[in-house]
Image 1 (tube, each protein chain N blue to C red):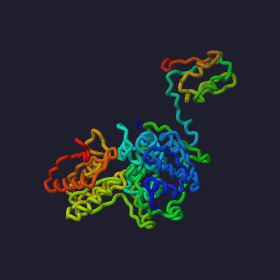
Image 2: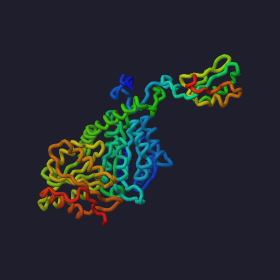
Image 3: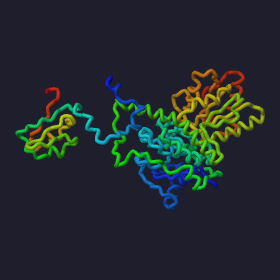
Image 4: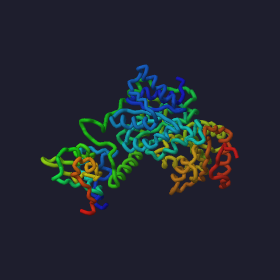
Length: 388
Length: 97
């Protein structure tokens, strides 16, 4: 069927036996929840749809619902995610397995509604598992899988399914979906491990002073460590059902590559196409696309890039004052202590929805290949596509 | 904080800071937060229970002829002293006890 990224996420949610949806509209996420509200109005799902007055309230309602044992979905973007920021820590701290679609979009100022990943990168330490999609199909597939990852008893953490604003949220593509019956078998209703239950009185969200707070943060970090193996198990099951293989990351021609680009989200599609063309010309280039960004799969990234001479990390978000973009810093720190240390450079691109073109990507590869030969890097951090 | 070393670690604590025991706040005595302590003049107290109604912490105990303060939990906010119609409760600085 033909679906946009927004519609694909909503369609997957429709098949996910979601008990509660609480959300507030914001471009370019609006359609995710708008379409889901139609499913509710048409009686196609039996979800409790909570209309709220802000994203702060939306996520707060999700936290409360999740603690009763409900399966919960929300979605937002940009300023909406920023407004949720406070509650994002509460959702992960209280171990609520909420799934949230994020239409990645620039943050103000200046005001801009277009796609980049500044919003999620600004919330990267909120304790949420973060998955980035390349296309509408992945948006559908990861939504279904995310509930399983989030609700696994070893994890019990919220998950964001990230879609590049407009590029994915509004572009229609062919999407293969499961039948409702298949989806129900793959993803049965959430097993109730509920902590709000009148027959078992308990306090949730209690004050934790210096004698206890630290322990709960350590628990969260441990839960994060459980996410990658659970993700792999969930992806294996999904692959058996659909034939579509998912995992922590996806490599393209990395084995003998001299120059590897590392990126997140929809840009991977463009980079892969450029890499294919360059490969046809005999250039040894490759691509490493991360599906999972948090927890950061350091070992897997290192294994994938260790043979390269130059690694170029693409950051679609700026960390003003930092040495590199967030993804690049993660890649570099993954290499600390490793024997193989390729040259790593950073590309900041696409802020505020600016397109990155295949020719720009090809130049990045060419420069990387030149650096592989000479060992000399012209610019450690390069802003690609910005006017001087 | 050395006594904290004996408290349970992250492996054994219920996740997410959930307190699985009901009514456990009674174990957490907050009386030492107090800077001023309410002192009841038993002779003046008419046992009208206005302080008992107003106390936000449930720290007024009802006795047969007068009220009594539960100093384990009273945080010394002084509402009881302000509301007492016969001025039977006065606030004393803790250090002057």
